[in-house]
Length: 302
Image (cartoon, rainbow, N blue to C red; front, side):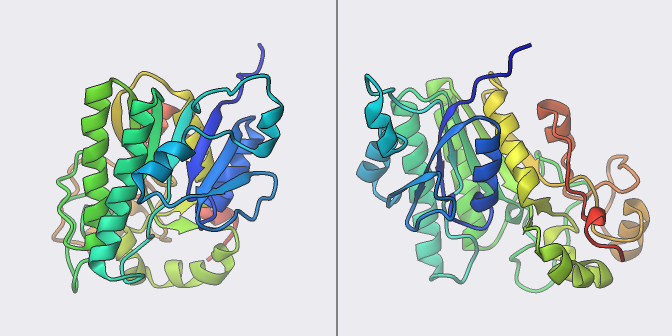
């Protein structure tokens, strides 16, 4: 069987922590890419168009661009891309004042989604966050409502960053309904780069209390590339929300035993796998066929 042809994809935020690993993965799968960012990508074979996504005009024009100067050699302009993947954002609170974090993030997401839909682009993938589950940036200690954390959870965060992500999800749902397109939301877990297993996992695994805000879950940045590729290829789902995490909990104790001992007041409302991450990726495995390649235990032995 012939390999599936790659897509023309515009990726926003490809110069950031997650994007710099997702871009080469997508390229390895045969996709043609352009990066929209304020700083160039470290991957010189992927063109970066400097774009302020808080400007609706810049966003619309960027989504009609050629993917690189090399495409001037084509006999005609190929038109809008097949898909847009939107990762660009302030990545957390306290990089800028709260109001700037909120207004910038939601403006970027709105502009990308509106422009894509009005240009007739049928596939948009946006980055949301584990923070919408309400504990990551809560003030003081807080409890999850229940385990596992699934996509139908009653999300009610208190911080501006998570609120911006939740508002972005709502914009996505509205535009998917209005235009009848596929818009998939990825609630991305704590992103781990390859070098961070050695530097960070001794603490993550050795002191699990430090991981409560991340629900003892994570996503390897390279596996996030696989998730994006699968989302690009899976058509016809309309609006969807997916937890984007790896399979297993970041503890040396099985999930149920760990949660019952350390979070005794929080109910486990569904049967969970022996080592299943509390921020479960069950839906993305069942619907998109995700199969993790980078289990943390490959890189750190407690």
